[in-house]
Image (cartoon, rainbow, N blue to C red; front, side, top):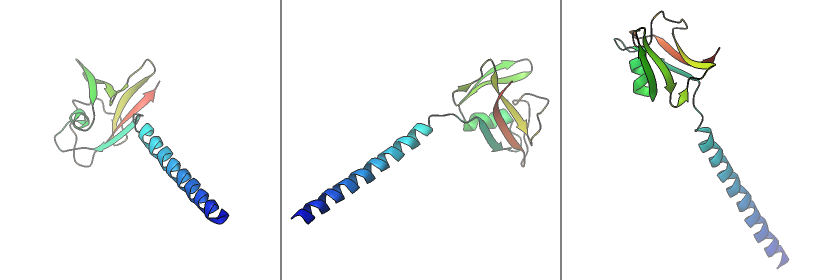
Length: 116
């Protein structure tokens, strides 16, 4: 009888530890999804602007100016006094705003949330 009781207790404890470990891992995964990306990469599409492609893939807030669009936030990650969104194409910073840069097939667009 003692061996049966010990076996049942061992099985119950083992299941409890296994199930609580699974729940902990699930909670970790969902929590990590709440953090926003600070680097975004995508490919150019012939004839579309870097900004148009960004808007198709992400939630974007921006202001329009005489120079072009100024991205204020991407997926809720907003510019601050010392960090802001900056884009590059093929690892070079273009001379125009993202809404004026017409991409081509093969372009690699990168948006980075950078500090001063």
